[in-house]
Image 1 (cartoon, rainbow, N blue to C red):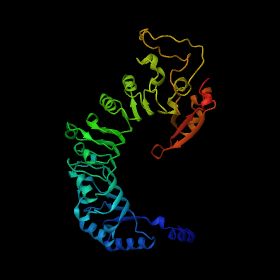
Image 2 (image 1 turned 135 degrees about the horizontal axis):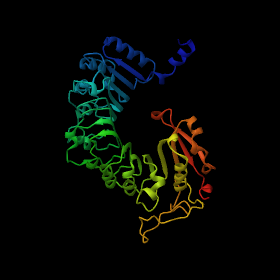
Image 3 (image 1 turned 30 degrees about the horizontal axis):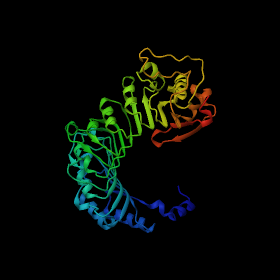
Image 4 (image 1 turned 45 degrees about the vertical axis):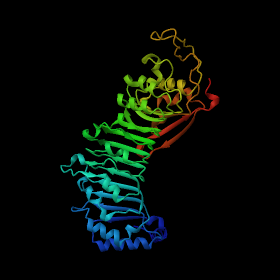
Length: 419
């Protein structure tokens, strides 16, 4: 129930009436009346449009043509969000048609979703994303969710799209067409299977404007074929492999990295990215503390790091491991009674690795050390009682996709970085 006062406030707040839900399957005149009512509630037409095509037989192009014309959607200068929700991915080609094209409308976000996971479907109808972009040529951000068997034709050029997001898709052929996105700045591919035929192409994928690459569980992703001279950020928690090492060697300008690394690959990874400034590290984080005994490194890895994120929950980080990482990365000098020794594997002519008993060879401390956890568990974690946290400034940051976890940020004032 809504009281009279709340109703009056709602009717007098135009920002609440931005979204228009089109349920294909309802009588078209009824949908038209809903549009007219929304338009009467605000000075501008709704700019958040969701088209529900989950009824059998839809998307129906004659129905969309009627609504585009009668509701004035085809004349809108800008749509902040346009979303099509399909019953299954095999009907996606129905919305990529010239009859419903919006050639002059700027679209900030275009989402194409499906109620059915493509892996559970027995019907896969190939379709081309190029047709979708020709229908809506001025889209900035396109998200394809739960789709299958789509492809990009090589040779086209799409200048307006700056963000391409593909998630939970199956058997997609995208490699040949990624170079078509001339001004693409963000590419996110998550939980998606790329077709083997597409991945086997030897053609170099050139993306000159790409700044942020997020790859998470993307089977057959063509790491070694990418050429991204402007890339700054690599995220997605992928496990470091030989292909990723080769990719990072070819892109030494990447400064922000989020990966998982095992013990076997830790030293190779550390030697490959000495320039990294923000590192979200999962897997063998013990390498941050055990680099002297468990690797052939001769100095603490990642000498230029400014922000270090330990990608484990706080309950998985022991007190000894935590304090060793703090001494190495957050405090420049630690005085203990430990005697420095030269590891047997290092010839006398090489620089000696430091031990806890001598000055840290790092030139500067990290600006921030981060740990994931929940508010209550942070209170009981063993490392939370460490005396090294004295004088440390603690702040927390929330991330909607990680709830109820928090990211606890630890910062040591400069006065406490020398003990």
